[in-house]
Length: 290
Image 1 (cartoon, rainbow, N blue to C red):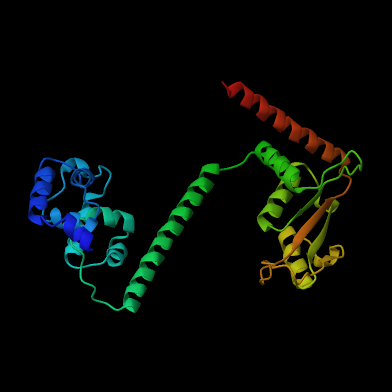
Image 2 (image 1 turned 120 degrees about the horizontal axis):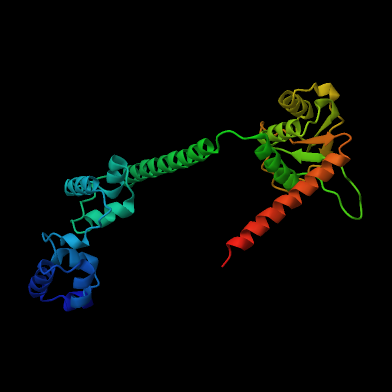
């Protein structure tokens, strides 16, 4: 501190130079570099009462929010209070009011913590609203799907999630497993497009032994429109106490396994269609490269 006082001993002379530079249109950074003032508090005091030049104001800044933030700061409001009131980020508030004097602390640490918590909650709420808007817009953009679009999407889904034939083990049949009810519903819609009758389907639940198998079977049966009694015997997974499983809530229903009987020819069509998609996408990609 003694060193700092020595550097800024001629404060009035330094302020006069700083004010002259400010009125000449220099930014805070330019003044700081020219006068070698690396202490923000000192710089604030040197420029106190001197408005920034117009060119330093960000063109995209919300002027009404900026003016309101400065007004609230002059009334002694903290960054947290201004954030809650105006719904803008602390970084923006800092840019808008950093040349103003700091207000005296008038609240307990507990009160300040509560205000900060409300500010963070408001930020989280804004982020969640933005996420939901993005998702809703994307969902609306999809619109309706033709049978061809359902077919192609289902082929890609099956090749990612379904059982596949191996050269060393011929398994040419449709065999699908998933834990997401939406994915299962789409898979059934895909089978409808392929002309697969529901009588050719067989269902089985795969679930951890610590879960309620009967409830899981009832849930999946209602989703696929079948009777739980028609399900094959469930596959129970051994519980390993050393693992930290997250799927232990009441909404855990395990996975549903779907077999399609007499589906060898259908499997070959799906495999051929998949490689048709790959070939078409690769050809398009190569054509677009420079």
